[in-house]
Length: 300
Image 1 (tube, one colour):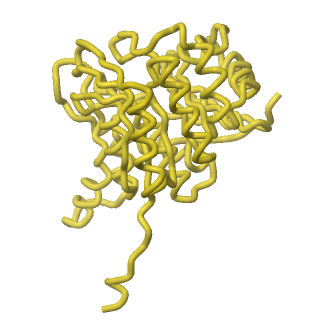
Image 2 (cartoon, helix red, strand yellow):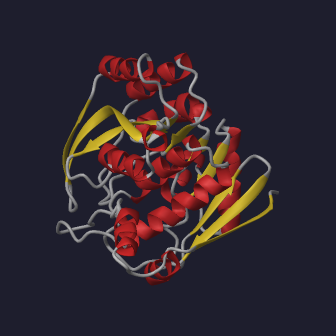
């Protein structure tokens, strides 16, 4: 009887981001990802975005005071074993979040510098770029820009893996401890590059032909935050997060008229298939193509 009553501490995971009413990206995607990784999800909403799979209709930003009050409410009571930061739409929001991160000495923040919605809608004020670089990036344990975001942050065009290497080093010089430049916007199979201040680590995957990719960046960064909170070393945390996202795309949900959402709970569904006398995990991985390859090489 005792072993069934034994309690294990569930990791508390905080997302500081915008709300997506359609449920595919932002806070909603993060909370689903946290739950899929066994965590207790919490949220600080910085912007309310009226969007769906096809378009963004409008956005209303939350005041800096309410952003900080939400952060205080979480940190003074539950604390956070992991923190993911997504959309910060204004310089005032960036200052507010950075001040509280310093106050509560958050050491493993995963920062996804969201700038555009999937359909190209501008979600932030570009004049806040310098504030992002000066206030937020230095607080990032892991920074996860895609190629357009990395280009905006560094002022450099990125077309090759060597360009990704240079961009990662520039972002590291801005203060980010580790930088993951995501290569999904390049043609061919996606290749992501992680620079940890010493070495490059490359992660490749088979590209899945699907338009249901709403919330992929949010999901990847929150999965990395969850994996770090669960005690995984950085490279394994990134690799496992990429495996998770690739599987979630392969099992994506055909919901909506545009870019549909990922299936954040596909692993739970796999478990049910196995319990019902189905196939092995290896068979299921082969079927969805979510196997990843990762390797390291010395940084320049």
